[in-house]
Length: 136
Image (cartoon, helix red, strand yellow):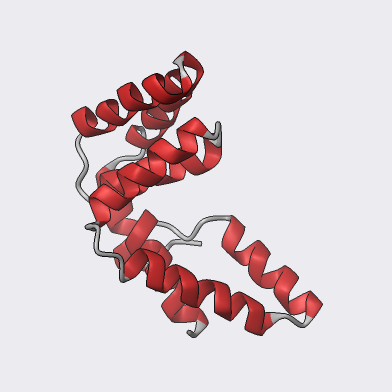
């Protein structure tokens, strides 16, 4: 998969290219392991973009799993991706409630922070980033 296609898939999913992707690309180039990074991106393509779950459900699941793992930055990214995919605040809150059952109030509180930050990004800016290629 070429770099343009990979960047396009990230923008489609998250609205932006995550900061971690150029870092992975740089380290793979330094290590001479570009084919390994291609394999990882191909796996992501299969597991995310060819998944039987629709995009919104898939991102809500990712969001909840990351809350339970206390992965703040990744949880915020997937909360944003869920919003891009059409999730409502009520659906995100449902994930927070479920995370509280599984991992307690720390997961719930982490989720509140992630959703608050994700909601602070206006939908219009996501569309502008996509349409003008201003991501990453």
